[in-house]
Image 1 (cartoon, rainbow, N blue to C red):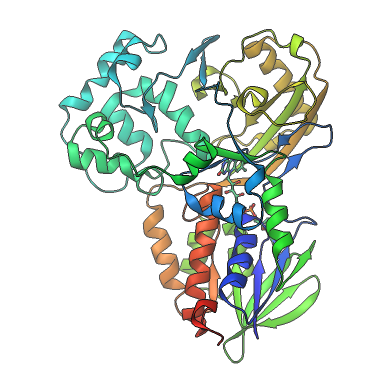
Image 2 (spheres, rainbow, N blue to C red):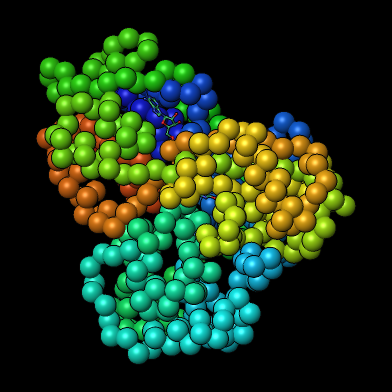
Length: 470
Ligand SMILES: Cc1cc2nc3c(=O)[nH]c(=O)nc-3n(C[C@H](O)[C@H](O)[C@H](O)COP(=O)(O)OP(=O)(O)OC[C@H]3O[C@@H](n4cnc5c(N)ncnc54)[C@H](O)[C@@H]3O)c2cc1C
């Protein structure tokens, strides 16, 4: 029996244990998490007969791994798409809500008319867009998303549209984010077509996703909230012992190519270790790795975030909430980065008939968690009154604090990740995963875990279930 320690029971760690079990009959896994619950940042508050997500609220059906995992653990009937009658979002700018023009894809226009007709952009901002037709190709090397888009389309569309749309995904600073690691297709569009507009417009559409067809939506969630995913995966594990509330303090090489894992429960020996903790934790738990590897891991910054969930009586919300919510450009002078109109975006069944929204705070460049909960709520009250005109008190409010919530993929990220793995080659039974590599989206987390489980047998000299018992 191969003994494996998986450190971190967020989605990556849970999926790692799940796929290790699926692939290998003869493994036993100890899955450790510092918190007294599994799931990491995936948290759903259902205490008041509402569904309020503290972390992610949806995932892409176009990336198949997570939909397949949900179906495999019996969640197929709970999957649901966004409210089909509500499309798109607004940008809040100078006290107005402007619809995001049709055809904007990853911050780049792919249709001329809607963007030229949008009152969100000035005449000068629209004229600047034509640069994209005139400029030569830029370098194929990595650069910041902001630098790339500003060069091709000017500052205005970047600050008012692209930055709030793109940095929202990573809570990142668009002028620091790696183009190659986040939106490589934009670089490819420029290299292939010179014009990013034309390259994006003529980009070959991916084959239709069977899951989008099955669930009639690109974005999916569960009808009682996404915590159901991590609970179901945890509940499906048969060869895994969960050790919750047990932080791992150190992992060290032991004789016979094995590992000693030190935790609050003492010291145990394993054949393999899978790390899925945030990069800085991983660096501190692995004191023996070369300084270059430590430096790469500790050099990955994380954004501290806060999410406020609030529920109001419908009559206390004085504006039309006919889209999924709104995004706030950094230059708008507010600290909130976005608001999701949960009750417009989703039709959760059997919830109280209140209007639920989620407001997002925190950017890579701005640490919201220097404020305590009362200060965050006071800031929220001021900003929700200013943006949405809500002055009546909420029926229910909650603050989710998310320290070290979102890893930042800075320029040069892919090259640093390659170097990291080269530095770790001397230890083939040590697997270093986490949201700091391979994408922050939930399906990316599942994909990374699945690939690890596929490589596991080869690196450990084990036969997989499909190939018969080892
Ligand atoms: C506010 C927010 C909104 C998001 N929205 C979306 C979205 O809409 N769609 C989407 O697809 N993705 C979204 N994401 C991203 C997605 O939620 C994350 O990428 C994913 O949940 C990360 O999972 P993980 O297991 O890699 O990391 P984590 O969830 O961070 O899990 C790491 C685990 O390691 C544990 N740990 C730390 N130190 C130790 C230690 N010493 N010993 C043992 N355990 C330890 C932690 O307790 C934690 O449980 C969002 C993320 C956030 C924060």
